Length: 208
Image 1 (cartoon, rainbow, N blue to C red):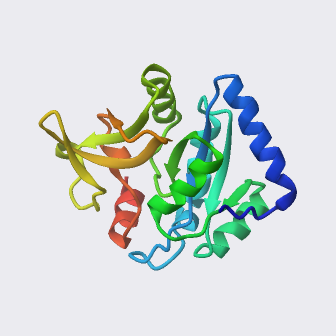
Image 2 (image 1 turned 90 degrees about the vertical axis):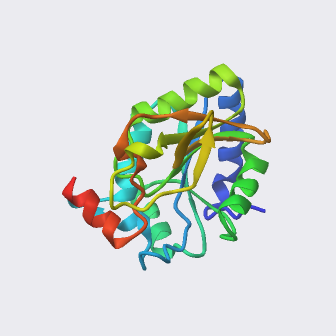
């Protein structure tokens, strides 16, 4: 089950979701609960050009069609939780038992939502809008991806898969539903492929 850091907001957040669903609107959940084991720190708080990754992502979410957002934290990210409280970002605490289990927990409260990784420095509002538009058309889960051939050299790659004979790399933005099927939405944007997972990814992002 989900653990809400601020219990008085439980009913507000659930009721707000039901209201938005009736209006045909979508929420975004920023995933910021990973251990960051490859980089040795909480990724949401890494700074690029004196700005934290979580703030860059929140800016893009604010500028998109999404109606509301939360930051999903876990026991692995206490500093991120503290920073979100300071920044007035509402948080949802999941159990931190892995990406898929945490998404399953979230789905029990929010039957469909946009999920965004907190480590995407080059995420733009237009990327999120394209996901929402794709969901409005197809009403199923959507996986944001970029062609493997345009992923910049020297950056760590996410999950790679094939669709219609083309190799694609998942880029950390999705529309999550309970559907067993997921359609890829391909972005021809090499910078969207940059997830900050390693020290070399941080260096690459800073150079860009």
